[in-house]
Length: 447
Image (cartoon, rainbow, N blue to C red; front, side, top):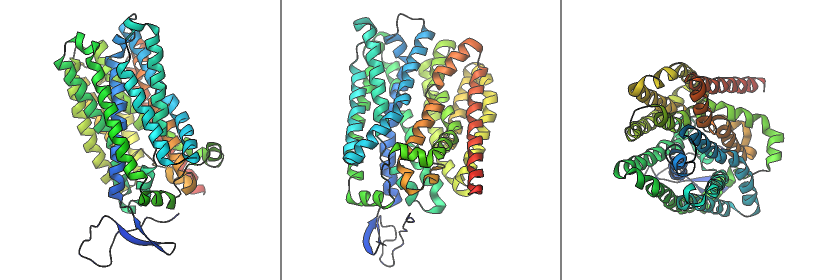
């Protein structure tokens, strides 16, 4: 594997030039600056997370009423969360399918098809009639569109996060790893703000009749813009050359698991503390507040928006901390912090509006610190040949194991047995992260 090139010109008045001329195998070429790659990563991830959170918030606030009006509110929300989880089940299959499409055709074809499918599914949900108009067919179509979203998200992997990690200066890898993760709080803040505005501006009848559809229209439009923005990056000659130079191309999945299957499992579990916390401070609390609290849902969304900004600031801090102490050590320390937080989570959620707000704000701060370094923390184990496919499938499995069923399991168990199960869920994720990092460290020492 070639080492990342440095951008220190030998002469000239502009030391901050975006590109530097380097020699690769005896030929002059232009290396893409890490800052340019970061722009592509943030644009792509922010659009995906906005779509992601529009559906997630709607699954807690809207779908129980629109698609399950014949059920009690708790049961309806649990069914809504079950459909929410389908995208994470489908995501690994989408990755495998679209990796084949890329091998058969090219990266731009794969990305265009994946984001077209994502936009079609999102628009389909926006136009979908509710249960009162077409009955059970509305639920079946909602599940179908959700599966399509999952397949599309699996196919939207463009390799830019891996390229960013490989091109980042060695002493700034934590910082550049954090940049791509900023799409998560950005997407959540915009989605939550849009729902908060609609809830405040519309009557309940109008909101459930047509108002909830507007965020899905916005998500469709943003995905179209993001598609062209990402294609302008990944299909350029410079980016194609950089991706090829680092061997960031798809490999057959069976070959990956035969050669590096152990690393896929370790990578998925290494990020579990962050992924377990992810939905327990974003989606699950909305359902809990709506069902078991007297707090206004619009006011609670504003608290979550503040939490989103806090998460973004914490992510920036995570980059500085990781570069000072190391990414793996930072991720392990934050897993222990999440484990400590899990002991207070039930008490805070049961302490009324003030305690619930504290739970959200502290949870978002921890999420920003941990999630900022969760992506690709052990992907160096894959080497150059398997990194592209390995990083994608590792992320898919982390989402599936850690986050897919978190709202469903947390709400169901807490409603039946009490809030202590929120703490138990968080603790299990933290334990898995610490164990995976320990195994990864032991294997490195052995090798």
